[in-house]
Length: 287
Image 1: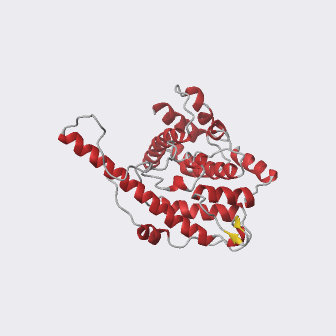
Image 2 (image 1 turned 90 degrees about the vertical axis):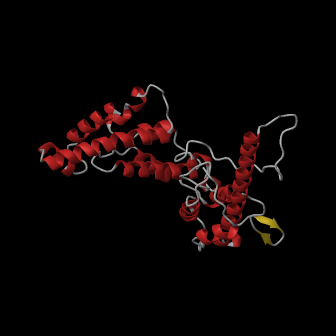
Image 3 (image 1 turned 45 degrees about the vertical axis):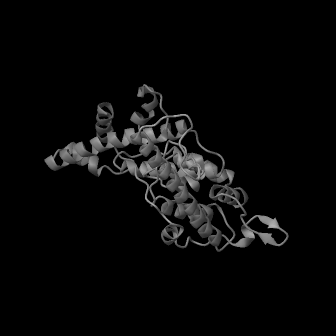
């Protein structure tokens, strides 16, 4: 992809003001500040991720990887000036392509550093000085800490999650999913639970996220998946495609007046899900 140039002011105008922490920080206020930053970071697609943008600079790796399987890596600092490798002959086309890649890498690095500075300024203003680490006698601030390190400091010192809250998360994860609800609501619920557990430094294994509290077809996902791939993003893509086929068939049947489809559409949570599960099973096998 072609890299668009963004200045510090470009980033600053989009990031604007982040919600200020006005009381003693806790896991909810820290997470709220972080997520506001992530939403703004996602407005700027990068060569690393069209979807997540610069959010990898703010998120813990395990949280970032819930949406983007490729780990975030800071764009390295290229050489100041373009130089050809010694004793290597390049054609004019190869030289032009090499120069173009260098210019794109340099621009991406400049954009990244401008984003870091703009976001760090906004985060710094949102957190009162008394909750920042000491930098000397009478001086408090984040010094040279990265954005990820700042949020790591905040979670470690103020984002404490009690054992009772962790038990509650486990119970929520084990709740059965009603296939009559949009599958996106299932994904969001699981990711919210996973994020909270990661913040508490008690992350769930991906296998647990995939197998707990789903319908029978989802519990068989690992057994029927020959690659044994347990990446969360792969799981989401697979089941989103299956659910899309299921939902399309359900809507077609409903418009044709089939009684079983009406049962599937109108079946309340906790009711008889046989029709829905049967249709979802068909979609599962067709993917």
